[in-house]
Amino acid sequence: METNTMAYLVGGPCDGSSREADHALLEVELNGMIHRYVRTTKQHGDDGTVYNYDGMVAPGGGEPGVENPAARVASPKADAEGQSGRA
Image (cartoon, rainbow, N blue to C red; front, side):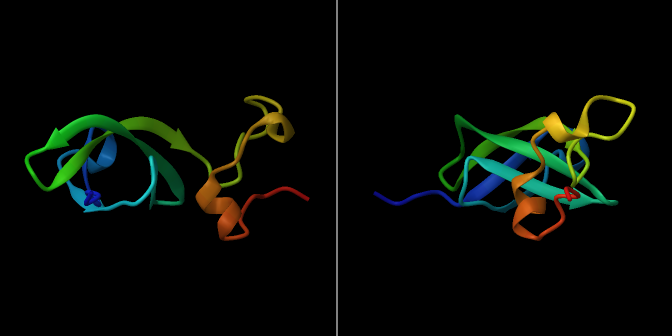
């Protein structure tokens, strides 16, 4: 079975664009923030899958004054790049 790797993004700052994706969570970094898109079960034609906008997070997780940053899960992309912001 062939896996579609083209993600068609719906909503958020990348609405209407497409890009390669190989996970259920697609993270796009724009202007220092991580924008998350989540794979849906809807297909886009014969060549891809629709991903819905799921919101924006700071690369290091929560920000002081908003909530407890230590209790917030950081971006998997930021963690992989060593930008978790945790000591």
